Length: 140
Image 1 (cartoon, one colour):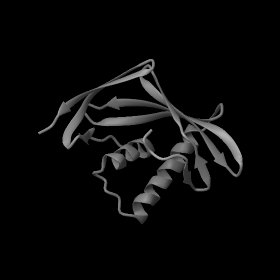
Image 2: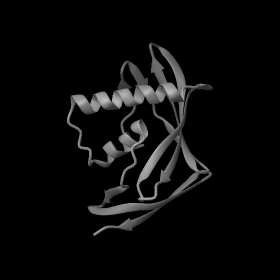
Image 3: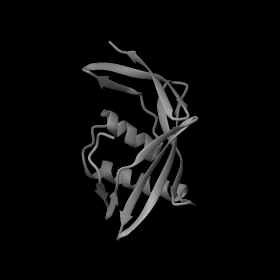
Image 4: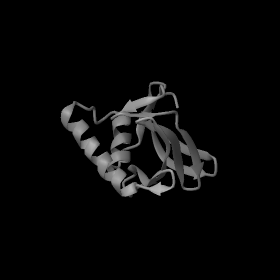
């Protein structure tokens, strides 16, 4: 939300998305303009913690309009993710890189980040209709 919109990538302009919290997940919807044609992209996410406490932001579905393109989107996202890692130095310890790895390549990550110069860990996430609650524990 705090990012600057629109974003441009590979000839597509991604306009400001909206996020909706639904039971067990989140839905991100946003208009995308490509070659003068505007369409709505919907991504359904279901965050889960594994037995080691690592978080994975599972992408359940990707749709353009009503058309499910999940399989194709996964293939393209993994290819783009791999190419980006190959062509530039990416700080894989950065929380944004970890989130990208989870979304684009299904890589679970330790959900630790800084809040006001202090490290915290997401211990639990509960999602209900319209609300996300995260339990944060401080790290020393």
